[in-house]
Length: 196
Image (tube, rainbow, N blue to C red):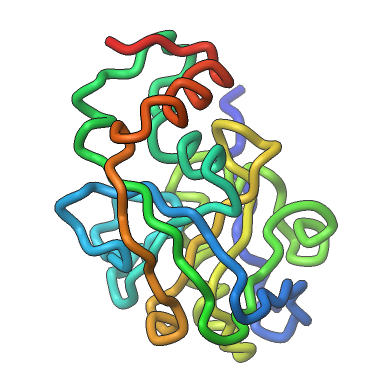
């Protein structure tokens, strides 16, 4: 029997009280992004977990820590022991600072049950997660995004920030991921990876 793809937003989702985490002004997120893109890039292509399936709003991805950002961005091949240097060389690290409060839906921990979701939303296929993004974005609470556990390191929290909060985020200066060799060595050691 084929496994079920994952839960869909319940029919009464728009009337549910969302589990919201408030991110205070001056809180920071870490973003690892293609160096050719703006650090506040809000993608609409549908290529990422919480992108809008209809492409009507953009989503910017970051994490609570450098480790979370690295796991989500650079650990794409499950079970790989090498990461291509060319992939890392084309990426920059930027710290995003909240210039005002942000409200993010807790899509982890007890928030899952309150929403009618399971961890499959942040670890399953994108055809499961993207409808959740749209349902959360369209909810009357008008939240700023989603906080969820990294699919590649579930000890780390990541965020999918909706384009509506662009004006409340301030990017710091970006640095190439490969520029700080000591920092990169710590990340590679954490995940027992070599450079390919």
